[in-house]
Image (cartoon, rainbow, N blue to C red; front, side, top):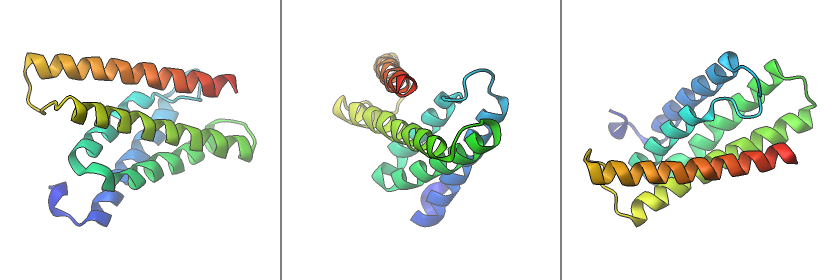
Length: 143
């Protein structure tokens, strides 16, 4: 269905879904609000990036940035500069993570067909990506 809609409408739909996911993550998050259950958002973003290529990246970035700013304003007592800085960093980490998976999937020519070989390769890629996300986020926490 999304492939038949024009690019801008498709991007706005994806950004809206991401908006809802990030706000929902902030609402249900317990503990650290720096990284609010980001894996669901990144998983959805990876799928959209694989299906719609690079044209969807700006919408993914905006769809993660705006709700992060709003979620941090509502749920976290921090300065506006810190809020925007962390939100930009989290949005950037999201783009780096999904773009990394996208390139590894293309480099290894992983077909989106469910079989043991493709599943194993994809799991390894996701583990590498989780390491990347954890490293970037830990660095962000230490700053």
